[in-house]
Every structure is written in structure tokens, then in C-alpha cells.
Length: 393
Image 1 (cartoon, rainbow, N blue to C red):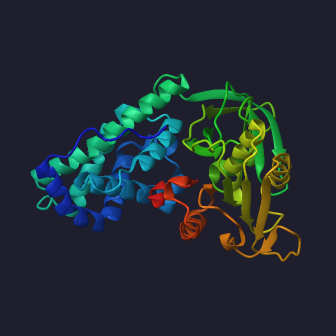
Image 2: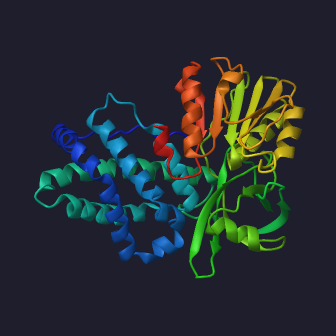
Image 3: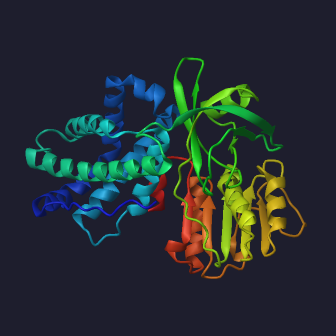
């Protein structure tokens, strides 16, 4: 689902104020968002313990994501000729829905965000008119997200924010790469590229959340892959076994389905292979006859997650090929390259739809290569595992 186009425009006066103050706010946005989160968690420590990911907070990823999202949307509102950030808002909305975010939380964010703006820029700068202009920006963003999230909950058949279900672990598979596949009881049909949030209570009593891509076929139970890296993933890998109960959300995610007749390239690195496995399961179940390029980069064949399943699915597709890049190993095997991924070694036609997942740096590097190959931006569909979807612009 794409975020609805904004129906409310800034007043002419507010648009002028935003245009005039955006450079100043942008220059201090990192300090503003850092101050905001400090104020928010001082007032509501339960949010850091039970909703926000502590690892992303410690690394500053969440602060940068909020800062860039606000700046991007404010720039569009001040100058409607700029591209509408609908895809960015859609990704945020789906992630919010997967965390159970509700409309009543937005005023809390507004209170502490504006207090942070005043603290960093000073009350002499943030006059009543400036505050009113930025307040309108905030509520246009918030109202857009609230409407999107309301529709997502309705489409999922759940009450607003009621996304968690207690699910029993039906299977656990330890992949040779070190990743762990967890299967829980599911309901209904999923879409390729969707993910679930998993909530666990850690030894210090904090209930922390992490999102994981599904790797199962479109129907049946839910299987997600966990790479031990971070406190939630480490805990799951160490402690979760068959028969245990986990808090798992209904699936969300906005990757579009591959067009039925167009060539497709599934490009991944590391644990970014997981949504690509989901897409391969979908293509195999649909019996697609289209050209499918499967491209994956990793440290070595040992660290390559779900390597055997990826090969099995490629072999089921009549027009699919698999190309691998292993950074730390040399190989003279067909289809296996040494070093970093280079799309110059792959024949991608301009009508190819690209699906891309990996680290921030990998996604940006491959997007640059895809652009040079002449693939239109509308045909490039990205997934990031960190809260940095603003990088996709």
C-alpha cells in the first residue's frame, strides 16, 4: 500500500517560513533529534524499554531516520514541485503498524519534539510564527501516517495497534551460515517481502522488539530468519526452541509483487537474502516463465545464509540464473565471482524490475550501478533492515 497523497497544504505564509528556516533546522537536526529522544525517554522510559529498539538508539540510527524524514517531508511541503515522499511514508507506516503504533502516541512525540527544537535553536529563533509553521508540518506528516496505519490495521483485520499474537514455535532450523530459522503457527496468506515484529523479554526485564523478514511460501505457517547480531537476535538464537511461545505480529511490508511478465533481478547481500527467498518462493509457486536473475554477495559460501534453499528455488524456475560474489574467497566455479558485486558482469535489460536488500552501503552502491545501467527508479524496489529508509530518497 502506498501512502496517500497529502491533501493538506501549507499556508502561503507557513510555506515561506519553512523555506526560510529549513536550512537552520537542517543544520541542527541531529542535535534536535538527539535532544528529542532524551526528553521523550526521560518522560516515558517505558517507550525505550518496550517499543524503541535500544540498539538503534545507541547507534544513532533512529535519530538520523527521524531527522531526515522530517526534513524530506518539510522540503516537499514548502516546494510541492519536489517529488512527493509517498514511498518513504509508506515504508514508515508499515513499520509503525508492525510495532502497533497508535494515533494517541503522536501528540506525545509532538510535545517533546517541539520542546527540543526550542531548546536547541532558542526561543528568540523559534517565534510563535515559526513554531506554528513547523507544527503544521508535523501534523500533516502525522495525519498522513495515522490514516495510512488505520488502513493497514483494517486490511490486516485487527483492531488499531492490536498486532501481536502469542504463537507457538513449531520448528527451529540452524542454518550452516549461523542464521536460525524459526517457524511459528500462521494464519492466512502472506505477501512476498513481508516481515513480522517479534517481542522478547530480556534478562533485565525490558521487552524489546525486532523485525524479521519472512522466508516462507505465500501460504501456511510463518518462518523468519534470525542472524545473531544485537540483543534480541542473540536472545532468540540462544533461547528459543520448539514448543516455546513468542509474541509475533501479523505480517506487514510494502514491497510490490513482481510484474507477471517482466524480467526480475533479486539482488542481496548477507542476511538481506531473506526477502529474496520469499520472492523466490512466490515466483516458484506462481510457475513464472519470466527471466529471473538471482544475485547475491557475501563474505564466503560459509557465511551465505539459506544458500541451499536459494539454489533449490532457482533450479525450479525455468528461466532463472544464480550469480554469487564472495569477498573472501577465490573460485573458478561457473557463476561464482571473487570480490564485490559488479552488475557489469550481468546482462540486465532496462525493463528489469530490481529487488534489492542488504546493508545501507550495499544498497546505495548497487542502486548507483543500476542507475548507470539505465533502469528507471520506479523499477527499483529496496528493503533496508535499519531505520534508514530515508536513504532511498
